[in-house]
Amino acid sequence: MIVTRRPLFYGSCLLVGTLLFGVAGANHPILTGDGAAQLGMIAQTSGWRLMHWALLFGLAFMYAGLVGVGLRHTETAGATPARAGALIGAFAFAVWSLNILFMVGAGWQLAHAYTASDTGLTGTHAVFVYDMLHPMGLAAERLATFLLGLVAYTFGWTIRNGGVWPKWLAWIAWGVALVDGVVAIVFSEFSPIMYYGQALFVIWLAATAVVMLAERRQPQ
Image (tube, rainbow, N blue to C red; front, top):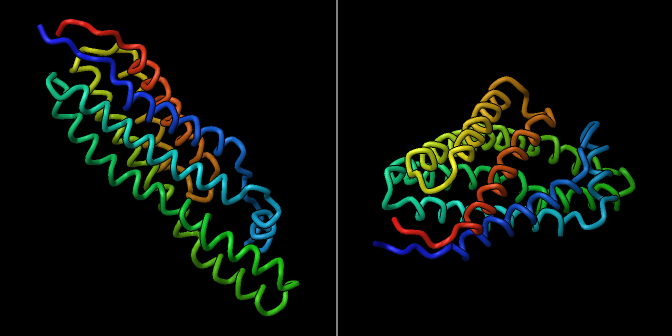
């Protein structure tokens, strides 16, 4: 009989990550209008950099927790999809971070260059650079949403085949996979619906964290 300890570290990482990402995401304003309007909104948003650093560290914690989900199923029938999910997840989270990195760095600097220049030549250049680079970040968000669907799909099979956690968690994962795939394929990267698809993935991770932390020592 093998006794499995409750995965406190990975479950805690997953829970902390979802809380950081969820709180920061809920307080993030929806950027609307042209480039100038968006730069003005960024400059006027207090805690912009703190918000985006919370998102970035949330990603780090969530991926560490996701790796823990895979490790929990290493010696089960869900081991193979767990490995696939961890590998796809590494790419997904890297792509997911690109637009956030742009916003915490270049986006913030461009916004302050625009507002400090009193819409002069420097402001015009700031808007031009933002309009050229921001669509790339949004395209990364769209690709990341699709990849998160693949991650949810593979971990759904991990949980289903592994048999150590309740199967409803696998069904939720497959639902998230379907929604994220549809959102990424059907909707434009300029649509805020993309972020709602990502939010579903984070909610599923939060539920997984609760299940992981609530797990008791049990014979295998």
